[in-house]
Length: 449
Image (cartoon, rainbow, N blue to C red; front, side, top):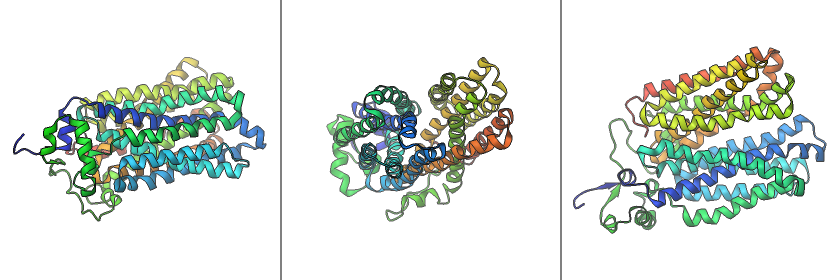
């Protein structure tokens, strides 16, 4: 090792997956699982809220929309913060914030207070997920990164499923307030564990004098080799396809719009915007459309539940393919599969088998592509702006989710027939495919993993 220089990337990539890397993935898994629990539980308490406060659908929609607006704000606020103060500190702050927000929500006495506290909870959630994606990506070996980050992100789906089951057990005994108590206590218990067990990003700390001691402690845990302490550990050298790191005074968001990244940033934002637009449009309105077609509410819920389940399968399939093939092409094909499947839903209303198949492949392609896009964008930007890149892409996507959930009913009313409406719903997925393919063509010389 004498006379050699060890890079952070080389240290993480060249060794077997260490116990520390597994700890990072498990801790980040728990963070996104808390997010999934919150998303699921707030939907399940809706009937109780409606009954207690005598609200109509529009008021209820405003209450739940507050959480989505908070998510959007949190994504834009916490991304640059994570690139300034570190991933670990940002995750812990986010977890504490959404834990307190959920706990305080259980004490809401009016719809106005509920809306304000759901917004606060959403802000915390908006910082937790993208920063967890960033940190898990930075500690995953390059050869296994798509699969490991995807498995970590499956915590969101598991949180969705667990949230529904736990809410069903809590509500008969403690009502809707008990659900938010559970959703607040769990992250507040997790926060000190994160502070104790979660390491700061090694890539983030290198080259920063105030993090030298902390970086050495992480190296000791990561390498299990005393010789590392005597060697310089740096980032990988800049290549011709990667722009030189900006000066320390440059804000992270400036990197997203420099000459190298500008076009890619806008195209990726377009893909995220369209993806979450379509997903929230379908997931929000599919149960109502199925019920209006004569299907029972229970059966409509079962069919709609195929979306997140198949999305998990699609995410794992895409992760495996992204290791072996151009990830931009993999995700573009996934979007096309989603668009075709969504367009078919409206024509399959009277055929239960075809309907289930169409919904299954809609989730497989759409949700699978979104999870893959999360992994891809985490490797697209340099370390200095990585958390901002992930967070702001998700923030733009959250704007799409708000628009999608709002416009679904309007389109259904204007187009009258699901057979016409669902092909229109599918159009943004094709736009996302084109945007992803365009990004891959522009950056075909850049290895994003």
